[in-house]
Image (tube, rainbow, N blue to C red; front, side, top):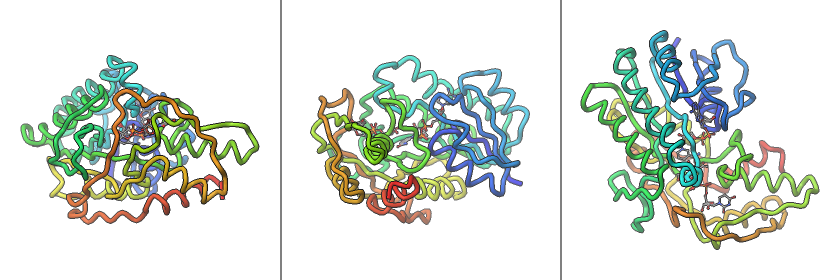
Amino acid sequence: MINYLITGGAGFIGSTLANHLSKENKVIVLDDLSMGKKENLVVNLNLEFIEGSVTDKDLMTEVLSNNKFDYIFHLAAIASVADSVERPVETHQINFESVLMMLELIRKYQKDLKRLVFSSSAAVYGDEPTLPKHEDSVIRPLTPYAVDKFAAEQYVLDYNHLYGINTSAVRFFNVYGPNQNPESPYSGVISILVDRYKKIQKGEDTHFTLFGDGSQSRDFVFIEDVIQALLLVASKDEALGRQFNVGTGNAITLNELIEVIDETLNINLSVKHESERDGDIKDSVADISRLKKLGYKPNFSVQEGMKKYLASEELF
Ligand code: NAD
Ligand code: UD1
């Protein structure tokens, strides 16, 4: 059996990956449940859950010295850009310091690791206007989140070049799908939108707060395509020591996205505007040619992905 460690594995992307991998492999999930939920994980004899923080050195030492992992996916982070603007010091401990500490522990205890995959972000590109973003585009991080993701990603790749540890990084664009937690004001926008549409269908009086005029655009990528990308990056030799954009190659504005969901569900969402968030990126879209060379083929446009997501939530 292949052994996996997934940090942040009770969260949105991590739990989907853990549920997929634990069908046939041994998976340890480590999560502090700050955003993730145990209920996201399908109970399975192959899956072990450890509640704790990636910043806890004693715990991380115990986990990494007592197990022999083939693959580690480091997904634990405070995923919200806006939260990092509110709490730069706390988010830095989790989004950067824990990564460096883990790299040292891997160097010491995980000599046979086949791959560490680190979850970086499209946020590293910032607001430099040239689109689409390819991996060699200008890096101009605008927020503590983006600075930490870029620095951590570079350390992760450097540990490959300097110490021969098998590492890769993925720069996710905007991922959406089942198990994304909508409960925080900092949650991913699609999870918040879906939550509002659900409430409307239940007859509740609610609205969606749109920061800015809704003309900001994102490359929204469905979770199933993200799992495909993670498995490819983890398994291909060509991915060693490199970073990969994970998106669809197409963007949509928030206004257009709301129109798509309104039409699909035959609902007219009530939208209230507030001023744009500090550090918010205007437009973002991925060039995915590097990932395609590994064999990646996105299977879901945002229209198709949204239909599958809304159907799985029994919204239509
Ligand atoms: P998520 O919030 O659902 O998952 C992150 C998980 O990490 C949560 O379960 C949370 O409880 C856990 N966590 C937070 N702090 C922790 C700590 N100190 N110790 C242990 N666990 C901790 O977010 P997600 O969307 O699944 O994101 C996964 C990763 O991908 C994150 O690193 C995020 O920054 C990155 N990412 C996500 C997106 C996206 O669009 N969702 C885009 C770019 C990058
Ligand atoms: C998202 C991810 C981040 C990732 C980045 C990569 C989350 C929470 N954030 O950040 O981890 O690194 O993509 O591209 O998963 N908005 C509203 N109303 C709301 C919430 C959001 O108008 O209630 C707007 C935001 O101001 C922003 C857009 O929607 O313009 C997207 O916001 P969000 O889902 O938080 O994503 P990003 O900031 O792009």
